[in-house]
Length: 224
Image (cartoon, rainbow, N blue to C red; front, side, top):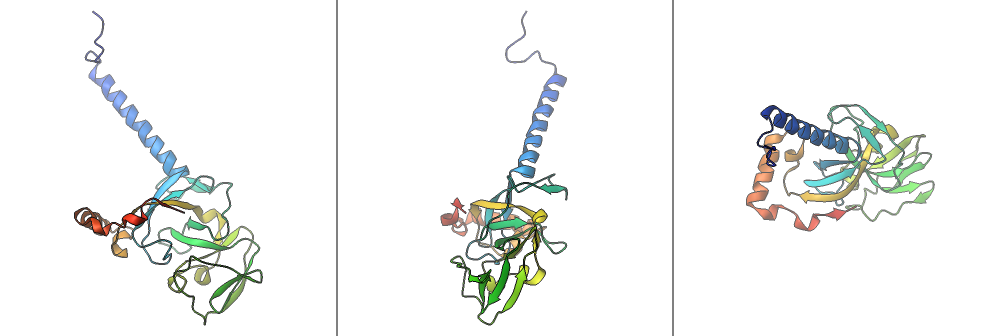
């Protein structure tokens, strides 16, 4: 008698092997996408206001920028180079910190200067319509000469941002990728989005389900 098309005569051990093999390839595909193409990140601080709000969930494109093994420190840079005023995700310059999100201000070889709070690049003022507020007019820094293979990063919330003005240049090898779209935005405290604060994060999602008004619907699917 021919075997049933429903697979009733397939041994249980073979079914288990097929199931495990299927899940194995699912995990491999996930790790490949996570390590080389797209990562999901959440914004925990106000340093990029008004471009990015606390609780914005973004998809970050790693394509061409960086490739690595997920959940390990192993990674290597690829061929793409960030452009001036592009928003970039990069590994932190300070220990025991989550990845940072800032805007590229100075490219390799640039001469960056802060005059009365305004940014000047190679002797010319930089037009910055994305700033959240007027920079501090008492701030005068630099000039900084950006070394080869490095970048000068600054936050859009210029008066409340720890960036290259404080900890220096960002090497190309530290750059992970660039945000491409906001897929969720939840109005909650920054504590909920800090690494390791799982209970607070679950509470924020729970409140968003109970009170949909906490979701910033107008920001969903906003591209960069």
